[in-house]
Image (cartoon, rainbow, N blue to C red; front, side, top):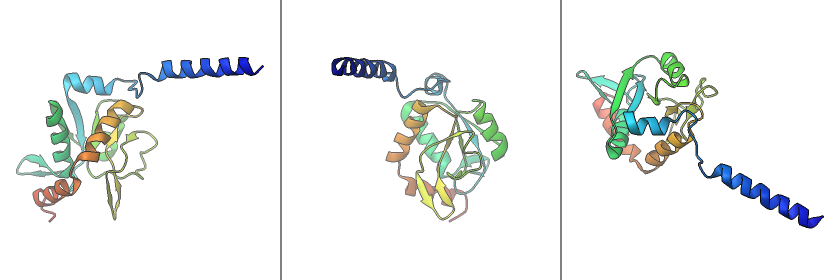
Length: 164
């Protein structure tokens, strides 16, 4: 009986490995689409994370997204809007990312994806919002945020947004 169990266990491991070889997955292929067509970013104006200054977007998260895209040769399209509308559109995969001072305990957290917290502050653990279930895309963003100089981006955001 032990031999059967051992064989069954080996077969289960082989089957699991065969399924896991393409992990992490993006069921909606966000990472692939972004690489081909660029990043669609919804922006909630929330200084110092995102603001408009002299007709152009500025702020810590705007700078972080621009640097992420520049490092990968990606185009970025920013769309301004309210948090509720942008996050609903993100859930429908109309955006690849929503930024603007979002925190991990967002009331929308059950309906969308969130990166791991990349900045801890008095108002909460700051995250970026991503389409739900898009793990490969989320991991790319988290890897970048893990290497980014968040303090410098925040200092620039405060200066740019007049929140020094």
